[in-house]
Length: 570
Image 1 (cartoon, rainbow, N blue to C red):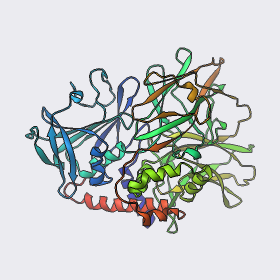
Image 2 (image 1 turned 90 degrees about the vertical axis):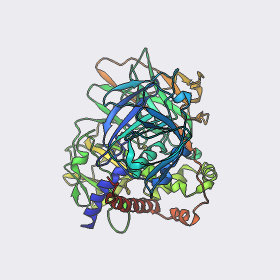
Image 3 (image 1 turned 135 degrees about the horizontal axis):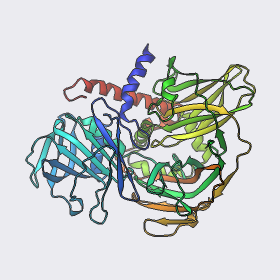
Image 4 (image 1 turned 90 degrees about the horizontal axis):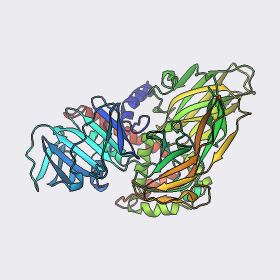
């Protein structure tokens, strides 16, 4: 009963930091959040309606608006000012600051007025509406230049955020009452950690595909990363992608090459974590999907149905791991199957990793520098001991045997990952597969199997033909091979357009395109205070990170339950 209650609570509280496909997702009961992913190249952004949420770090997180140098504009009717020295008082539920005139670069003819399904464009030669936070007030407040104001949070009607550090995203929150924790949820998005964003040119626009070499934050522990580019189209004889730094980090890219696989039409191709291609034909869904004794089949049965399993309940009292068991009908007369999983890291993992980093205080830059000499083996060993990967087990002769581990994919977009599994030694009429990870570290949208047909797959690798940075520099030599010669992007807003020659496709075939990348990135963080050594040493213990995740979740859940009963709660 306790596990069932915990799972139900999970489904509520997971809305705190949860992400939706393509970019950030926040869930809530009464708020409507609009997420816009801006097409970086053309200064466009497109609106997508999603669910929304409240929760996170309260006042400390809200103050990150100032710490991250957000340009805050406060609106009352037709009057607007820049709000400096912003502060949110949790106890009194007040938004405070000093009003000053708007900078000329932030005086726009139109404020963010978002409509679902419409594409917007701005003129970069006339205005630069990035890194802004617009706060709209109910009623008509007397706003005067130089005046210090304190406004009840309940009087905040709407917030629009235009930010260059998170994929040039605009977030609209609309509601009759906006609590402190709703503001804090936005902060989580604006201060998230990630890796280079990758966009595919589809002939008209750049389309966001995901993140390159996610989780590779250590120079000497880099591993190759493979990502399918579903939106990439040939244009004038070339494929074109864009790699951009849109977060507070320094990104070092060593290799980006395309892998082309041509097969008869109707064949889906995936790669496994090592880059080996697999064919998916006539996929079969599981007949059962179970977590903690309850069915979760509907959450992973359909592809791209906006319903996913979030590993939000623990398997038992002895640890804080979460798992799912998949049961498939075993195919006849085949020695192997190809498993397809559509997965991504959760936004919660990103958030909780940030809370871990905060414990280093002002020592964090030094710690990060020392980390760069860690080996791949040392990095993987720590991740494994903390149950950060997604572990995949197959039941053989009554025992769970580890088949594969999937490391970071990033939290901003789901990935389709394939895995070949030999089944000749499985004597039952069904196949049992277990997915296990730390508490709320991963999300899965879809799972299926198909018969293993991989012998005739041929691929070709294409190196960069040309690569032009936002400053006009040609840097293709830095991206053509893995040689420790890096393209370094130090600031948000830096990007490179990479061109690849597009060979002809034989008649009757269709092409699958993957990008193989290698590199690493370091966060730009300025935490305050001394290191919490007593707490940090605990992270050397096996499984402490997932325990930290579950404990932090429980603390937020408790706070959420208390605030739900208060006057301003949702």
